[in-house]
Image (cartoon, rainbow, N blue to C red; front, side, top):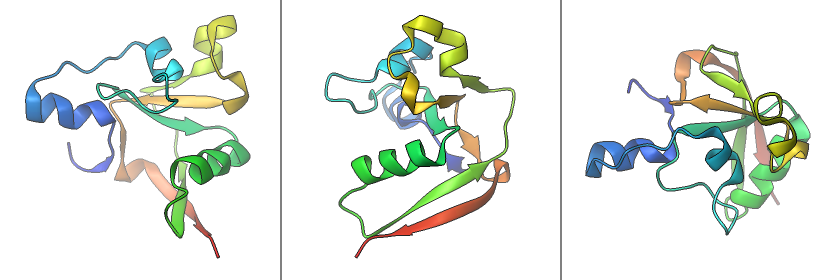
Length: 116
């Protein structure tokens, strides 16, 4: 992988040979604790800046600064609500999932978010 935002399952695959789970429903559902699965083959993004900010506040609350990236669409990106329809577990997130990750070349801007 040439760098960028990689799915959590990427390291498990290359370090331990664990198969990456590319089931979109499993990805969208996450784990019972609400976090990403260890074998996840997707990177989560959102169509909504507000949803991205809320996710950042939740997941990255221990950090004083984080970034929300502006990403160009690509054929490996799937709108979770469009694909899963009524089975989308969190439709309010307006998630678009990137299979295999997002290369740096696909990131064309960002917002820096500071706390305190």
